[in-house]
Length: 110
Length: 110
Image (cartoon, rainbow over all chains, first blue to last red; front, side, top):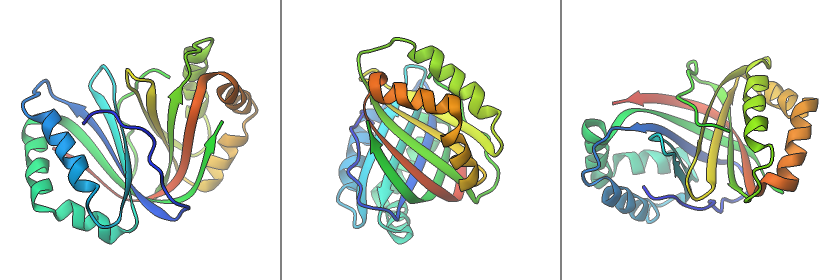
């Protein structure tokens, strides 16, 4: 996935999916799939935004924001997303951690 | 802050502080302060781990994990951390968003 800017999220509460991943050296289709998933996620009910960064060493963090656990479950089960998840497990990710969290407080600065 | 690996967190529930930031072009003392804050955070009661990535374009995401809201509040109020926060607002960050979230579910793969 290409890098993104700040997500414009509403006042809490809402949900975050924190996806931390280490890439393999296989690039095959990764960027296209990442862009397509962002496009698709943005059209899902309950999607609030996404923030995504990958470092030069291959470690990446993507946080997507959602209105509810139901919205997250629906996105997880989306057929095209499931195909991408399967490719991710087989080709693109050496390891990943997924954490679903309820955002209770938020602030910004400076 | 330099890039880190995966945090080894326990079974949920626990808390995450999601810190998304855009750096200024000012580097003055930033790396040293980042390393020092990680060292200091790791010694705080209730600290569970940290994952941090900054992309080539200056956008970064750091997620720190904690046992409780009380542990997060204590770290936020730590005197040396408060000095770093102040420098961050003045020099290092063009913009940041901080979100405090309760991790309810976690998984890993492939």
